[in-house]
Length: 165
Length: 165
DNA sequence: CATGAAAGATCCCGATG
DNA sequence: CATCGGGATCTTTCATG
Image 1 (cartoon, rainbow over the protein chains, first blue to last red):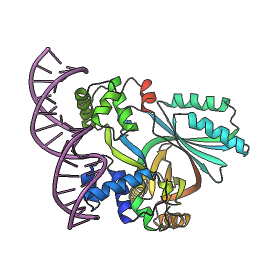
Image 2 (cartoon, protein in one colour):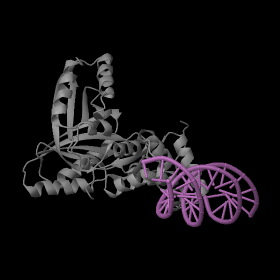
Image 3 (spheres, each protein chain N blue to C red):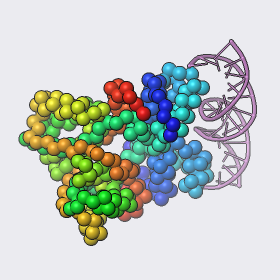
Image 4 (cartoon, chains in turn brown, red, orange, cyan):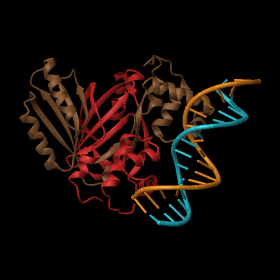
């Protein structure tokens, strides 16, 4: 949690583990041009600082079945704090919603829903509407193809962001 | 690439590594109620079958700086195969675009863009329009808050998907 | 699939220059 | 920060039941 200044080496470490989460500490050190010991110390600091939330395998879902993805935009009819909280609590509990962002001051939401089938998706939306979440309007965009899925380019982002936390 | 039948144990392994990518093989075996040896063999099969694309650290970007996320929807003015290909090639080369899906038969795209600032985002969009990609219309949704970010619930998805690949 | 075992690599953490 | 250890742990691959 402590505020620490990140130098170029720290960034390189983050880039490396983001790309290859199972690298051995020795190879990671080699990759960032550092000897193992200080590299390990830095990695520990980064983890302790909460900059590394965890490690996850990237599972090829498309090989597990023909699942349905839908992008849904939602606007609420009222914009009291309690309206947002109620909606977000509901969304937070839906395991099928994998992403949700608030846009334009919280007036609208964009979410991505992952279900076994479109039928399941429809049932989910019906339940959602019955839950009286104050949804004014929603639009669904059925995903027909995944064109791209990548991680943010950390190195590029930091290149023009000198005042890091 | 080979087609293999996945049983409940395989799914448990995938769920486990998806959640904890750095688990030691011993602890993974314990977690899925298997002894280390067959667990290791299964994991190898899953990897060889292309079901595990890789492992990645989840870096807390919001602690690295105040970056800007924007959701962009795009529709193309024409729908020839070459139009899609040109657009997708351009998107594929943009490191700032972290996600892109085609919706409704490829007529529209929804993408997520990650930039150091909104100014950078605007410059990016200008360049994109100058590139003559046949964009008819686009809408931007500036992300003001990340409400949720989760991985698909593999176990739930497979529960009602008996005919797996 | 469980167990046991063994060579090799890795991890974590010291101490030193 | 680099290097050198060293004991504990983990990995990977053998057997065998």
